Image (cartoon, rainbow, N blue to C red):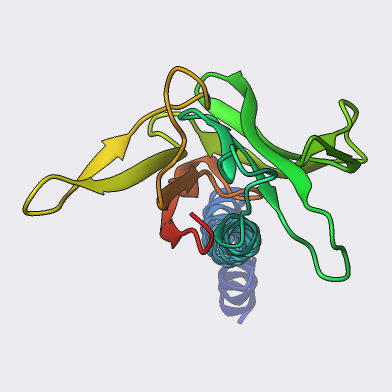
Amino acid sequence: MIRRIARALRDDRGFSLVELSVALMLSSMVVGTFVTMFFSFSQNAADVTGRADSQEQAREVLVEMVVEIRQAVAPGPNSDPIATMTADGITFYTTEIGSAAPVKVAYQRTACDHGECELHRQRYASNGITQGTYTFSGTPFEQSLLLTGVLADVPLFSGGRWSGNPKTLSTVTSCNGTSVSCAFPLVSITLRSYPANTSEGARTPFEMQEQVRLRNA
């Protein structure tokens, strides 16, 4: 009888230290897997949201540019609606609702760092008419940072004009209104940008394009 009791006590001694260690290790692996999956899912959701927000913001900026450039107007009889244009910027004159005088508007891709730039806008008020042509202040009444992460790998702006017979569309890469005329009816905008608020792995650029026909060209 005593031997049976001793044997029973020996069989009921519980888990050994090795068994407990293995159990804890397996539990940690399971918990770690679930935590990794949870954070991965959360990051993916944040990346999708960040990319969608950036694209929506870029689309709003692009729509503003299209509207303003489309209704560009010459400030005088011997002027063009567009004053200057390069791959990085465009300066033009446009009308605003409720104002009889045009304003001068400049969009500029600047402050570039490793191919990523900022897109700024400046507006200049009219000083009145001199010899039949509007003049403008040298100090902007509005300066706005519109977008960050704008890529400099493609021209942001380019012009287009029809020429020849039959008519073919030629590209104008830059103009200054003097030695190179800015008298063209089409402006192409190519906006490439990195989305903000995304992880490094999801930070791939998106691109938006618009071709604007000037109403008053």
